Length: 313
Image (cartoon, rainbow, N blue to C red; front, side, top):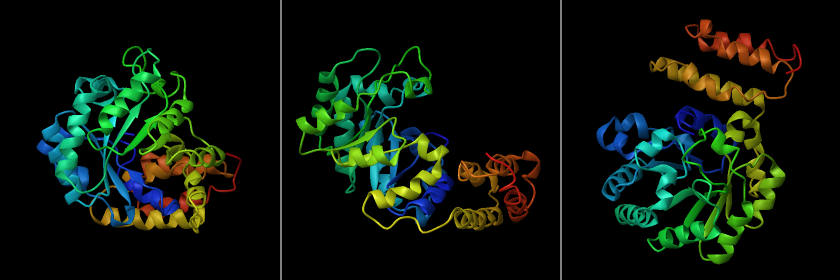
């Protein structure tokens, strides 16, 4: 979810679910150690609870980055061992780390020694075309010995050659039953399943057998889906209407503009809010119109709202 789940996206998603744990886009250790820390780590208080996802492989660097995350107020540090992109592979982290479980364990231990908040790992069930349950079982076993107690499992392989990141989300077959096997083999550990989850029924089914469910792009493209999640977790459901959510976002974007941040940095994340609603296509076109980017956000919001009900999406 790099370049997607930034702080503006998470502010928007928090309006829809009060209790879901939100994750940052992956931030590399190098960006934190050598770059602009506030740009990468600053977030809105309304986002809590929120976890920082790190990309890296050097234990000392991971420890330093995790410590920064804790200091900035994140509730969890998550190590990404699942991203298959070439950009990430060149940095020797992401899914390729699954081939080096001892190194991942060293990184986890270094982070746990540096912080008092949970350290978790997100990974695939395998890499490339080899399909062996023993591979992912041994990976989890090795990393858990370093103190990791929670694993987020994207239940498909990551092909490091021959597929784009987008194709890696669709072509390698899903094997959710392998996550259930991991839970059976490691009953003391917690497992969250990820991959191909698009309905409330799927979430309910997984919550009956596992410790959690992670949803990425389906939530981004169809954000009203999040409004169901609190109820699925036994909490009070979202009380805001779509109109009220949009009104909150307009207030937020207006505040951004006063700080010198372009309001469209946030508006792009809510384009799926009206999915399926009459006039949604024209509503999106207004919010996406580059010719309106220098207009006051409330003026754009008024133009967009006039499109609703005008035609089917």
